[in-house]
Length: 485
Image 1 (tube, rainbow, N blue to C red):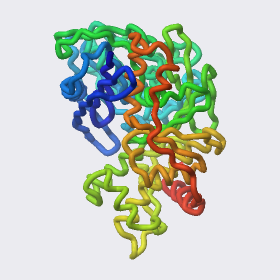
Image 2: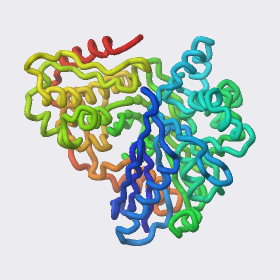
Image 3: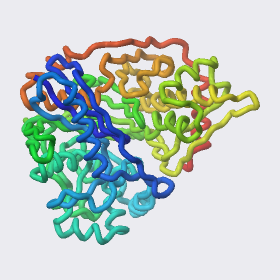
Image 4: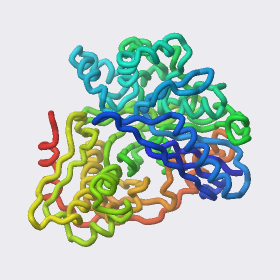
């Protein structure tokens, strides 16, 4: 038996066919267009996401092997998507998690004294990152579309809900707790949509999806809508929780970091809702069909891999993202150059949406190699910032995944900065793998998490070496300069 996993990320969709022994038998990938209508605004056309999903799945299924027995979905979180319940067409572009346009909404609510209550209910904070403020903005700035939401003709959801609607030809409007807990509308204690929050943000509760467990019978694909396939959709999770699951971080205290467009550090806190006073978020990791929930603490870093993409696309310093390692290795250090990649503000642990990128320490001898190396160092520094407040500076082992985890120089520098081993698995597509694991559990491909743990294989372990604390202090000083707080 095999599982089709769909990973609808921020810049493209990956589809994997995962076998019963946890191996990838085939893969498809399709990028889609990013829209930046104004500085700080980021939008996606939902139809582009759907078409990329179809293309990626066609490529993966063409890879041969047994037909999949079920489908799992993981997705970019927090992105606000609207679609017509009847036609499934989107009346406007989605507002992406990276989008900063709702900073004014957040400030207004904060000034009115709402943040402590919002944090108490959700484990989150008032930040443009989350879905609800985007919906508030739409209600205020796109009244024609919002009238459809209020009438019940237009559905509201995140990317997982939108894809499930498309896969089922509109038969299902659902989400899971891992995605719901990122909206500012879900109560950590109640385990459902909070009427108080829906009223605060002006979101009609009837427009929101039903919340279902992360694995089990969630719906069936419609053959006319999805490549002639009728398959159970049996697993779904937001991308970072899916990566935690894919890394088999099933025990309390397990820590992983996904190095993608941004970097996201999560630690499993088990059945306990752990609160942070140091800029971390409390979130649902996953919920079993029994209703039992596992929670996590999360540090969300908005720009890491995207900074390398900026070196490539914005500055033309490198031709490809993997080239960054070779270029950085041509110099022994950054030559005192520090890059704070606050290109869309700063996330955890600073939470400063007004911060902007900064490069300091430039001299006449600075070369592109120094700037490239400073960018890789910045990623490791940002992760250290989060890990130190998350664990008190005692990370046992960091499990690393995502595209930039293939960079050996970055992984070694990360181990040095954490003073802890960094483990990279054989399969680094752990976000999609987590979706496959959840779907396989839901459909009976695997019988237990113990079976899943046996499929995890170590590719390389990076042991910590000498730590450059002076470079880290230069980083902290540069962050203070980039901040508005």
